[in-house]
Image: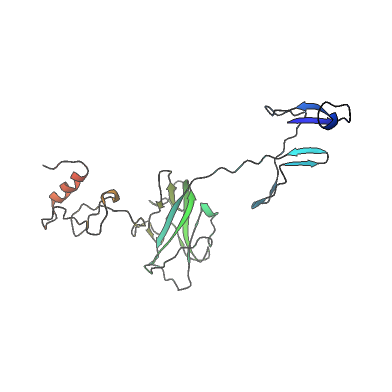
Length: 245
C-alpha cells in the first residue's frame, strides 16, 4: 500500500505533480505506529454486520479483512427409536434433542410415516461425537434415555444419561442404534444395507455383509441340501477366503 500527500504543484506524482509519496507498506509485518488492529462487527449470537472493506472514518483509513468460516465436513445421520411400548395419541410427536441442537426438545421431529411405531429422521451433522435423547412433545413429555452407566450410556463416567453416536470421516452415512424406548435393548437396525449374521443355525436367516449382496433369500442353507448344518457355516467361511476340508 502506498500513501501520497497532497502537495499541489510541488509533488512528484499524480496529475500535475500534485502528490508526494510519503510511505509504502507491504504488510510483511504489522506496523503499530501506523495501524491499529481491532476485531469487531458481531451483533448478537445470530448475525454479523460489517461495513465496506475500505472506509474513511474520523479521518482514518479503515481496511476490513474478513476471514471465511472454515468448512466443517458433515454426514447424514439417521436417528430412530422403537416407540411400540408407548401409549401415543395421534397428535403426539417424538423429537430428538441433543448436543447438536443445543438440546432443543421441539426442533427436530421424527416421523412414523409407515405406521410401524419406529420413529425416524435424518439430519446432517458435523464429524465427531454427538449425544442425544428422545422426547415426546418436548421436555414436558416422556423421555427416552439410558440408565446411568448402562451399556448404551454414551459416556458412562459422567453424570448424564444420553445415547450417542460417533461420526467418522470415512462414513458416507451414519445410523444410530435402534433402541426400544427408554432401554438399551436393540429393536432392529436402521441401516437398510446391514446384514447381521446369526450362526446358531436354529430357525434363523443368515444374512451376509452388504458387500456380498444382502438379498432377502440368503438363508442359512447355503449348500442347498435342505439341511442347515456345519457345512453351511464352512461354505460361508469360504466366502472370506477360508478353505473347507
